[in-house]
Length: 304
Length: 304
Image 1: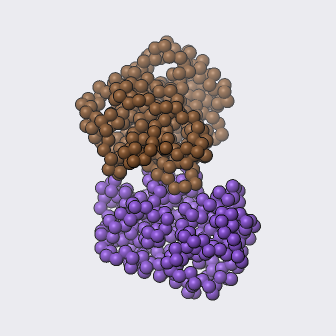
Image 2: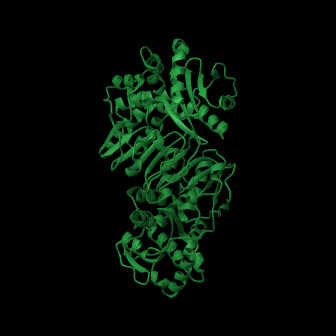
Image 3: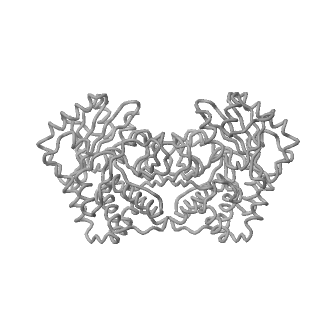
């Protein structure tokens, strides 16, 4: 059986992509099942409930399994013992990672806003119809990853694909669906600092330094005002585990920018990366909404 | 401008893939040009002449260039200073190599017999018509890489794609076209041993040992009878440059198998890999036509 799985700290795109690819493989008469590497965030829970799709089971080890990866192509974000698995495919929209294979495989990647946009192209290539509910979660993944087409990663293909999926899923009002999702994301009541920071968090190696970057996208970042000290305390703890820097982006969907919180051994490098002055370890990054496109490349250049 | 280029020691698939992708990018209103990393073999020369396509120019360095790779995804086979280039796409049908990027890119790979089969899917995705001559060289690439559909790497998609391309290129008799190509390949008169061995030769790292594997596909391998001692002499020279083993596959297209010539520090590992007994450093490998599918994976397992 083919185990379809996305990256660690799963977001809506990674979960919905695993489900959509598993469904495509099944329609192609292959035995396949979606898996996840971690807990669902509140947005993803809402999306699966809305379209009546069951939550995938956890996978912890890839050894001796047939595996299809979605939404990533590097080892640090992937499932353990991937080198002992039979990797038969990858679909992604990030930079090309360090995973290698000893056999030819299927690889679909495009520089677009969402893995589900690429997966729609796969359905078209294999001439497989998308069911109403799978189209619904694929649409949600695009709305989530492109922040309702506001992120600079958004392409015309994302918009066109979302419109096609909305038709299949019978969604008349994409904006309302997106706002319902973002409201779930913005509800931080009763959540622990660890849970918030690790909801969408990735570690990177830059010039042999370990840099962690988390991101929280909400409708109005004033919800964080009361807990900012607690967030900084938690960021410091994560940094003390052997990292050079830990950054948290509090992204304001409506204002279309992010407040950067940062603890670092090299704050001047962080300032250089974004051409800003940190005040009390904080800075407003106007227009910055995409970690992938507007944060990581700048950090990589600055840490060279 | 986008520089489209295939692997070192170019074969017909790598050259025709570079030309076909450059043409696709141009049809998409992007500035693009095909390049090559080495001399054309006689088969490829015949193919380009037959369909009136100019030979691509040599590229020696990728620094500061926009690059689109075809028919490979690993650094050893790629152009120098690739890490200083802007890699915008890859199309391939081999195992996934060790090339990485810092930005998202387009990646098209399928476990099929020929890169041009994947490129046909790209044309369809972008809804671009293929010109008669480009369809002709893409068809030749498929006939060459799949050895007229006899290689075990051949898939139904390769056959279907070849038929579609033959229609566009106005080719009525694929078998005749393939035999004309194979006759060019089989003409070894007046060629030096170096030229023959390096016509289609790749180095691999297996368990930190450097292993070279060349392949010559001809209609009747008796053409090599007179020069076998000279071939062995040259293989020994290549091995003496720091390799653990150098293998040469003399593939008989009609008999559908290969004679293995081999010089090695570990002949018993080679014997284990193919489950044969070497006699005077030679063995007949029945049914073995694909280096990628029937030779490299076996060697990798045996050298573990």
